[in-house]
Image (cartoon, rainbow, N blue to C red; front, side, top):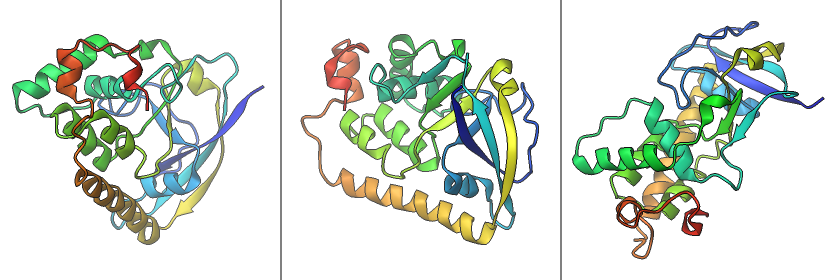
Length: 226
């Protein structure tokens, strides 16, 4: 029986996560979002002046359908397409709107058929990177690099009632907001600074969103793998 230890950062102790609750405009839609990393959960738990909790769970994966967007069959564009479908994105020009349409039509996996989704977490800095790519400001290789800058690892999103039923509360750990709010801010600032430093190196031969659209590039193109 395969079980994973997961953590959920919150301002509350959550012993019984409720299926059907949560924001619908999260990265992968409505669901219960967790991480394998305790320190990250503590960071996500803390906002300014509010103490947080890292709720600890055991997820029994037996019999669950899991889609892992970091596996070889997927690219960062599959993640980006899901993000475009779920997050509220202010698209201010025709280029961005066309990019979103192309991503949804050509790179959106059938993720809604799965019980659990594993993939990137779009923190503020990461959302900035995604917008920059669809605006043709950075290349695909720069986007792929940027997604690793904050060292956030992968997040787990529980989507189905079956997945919720196989999640068991184990314990909780207190997250000191003075310590972990600052850590979260520092992590985000460092990711942004490293990203800006990377932009100093122009990727003249890189693959940009406009190239993907113009050439009709699909998910099986080898140039999408980094």
